[in-house]
Length: 268
Image (cartoon, rainbow, N blue to C red):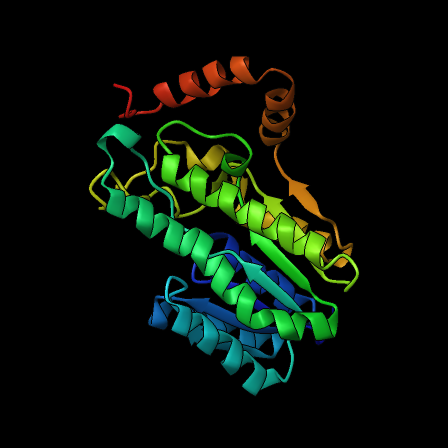
């Protein structure tokens, strides 16, 4: 992977930031993207100081023009693209009955359309390099989670899009990876939107017991290196996917009860 050009969206925190650091450590040339310009630049400066090439490109992935600029700026800086990691994402927590449709739009625009936009403009270069498209999905993209309707819908949509992309390009040597980390310690639950579209500013889970973002980055790197098609992490994540195929009605009850036990659950 040395000198491979890697674009990572949502790189200002969590899994994206951890991926940027890990891929940089392996000698990759990094382009990081996120909305927070100051935070993004600080990360780029740190990576450049310790590992070499890294550029920061402020990007709102919900905007097609920003995604095109991200790809154009990366090509201008490095000349090619080998890996695109579509990691930018936002979550939500509310019952559909109570949810503003604006929240549905916002989550879909970032999680799904952000992946579509970035992939669309990066694809010609990835086909040329026989590179990799990575979608950081979720177990919520395998099993619809109550109280996370927009989030699950966006991840199901992402996975359908990437599966189609893989099949269309099966003779073009394009690698497509769908990575499902499971519950990971990150900022995503604190920034998750409530029914009115405001950040809930707290997490319903004990973050100390969740998989670390650095571990997820390690697994994503190796999955890209080995050109795997699917990556499902955590024991609970693997069990959820397997049992949902075998006993879907029973799993409906399990995930309902899990969410119902959360602090300030939308079911209470």
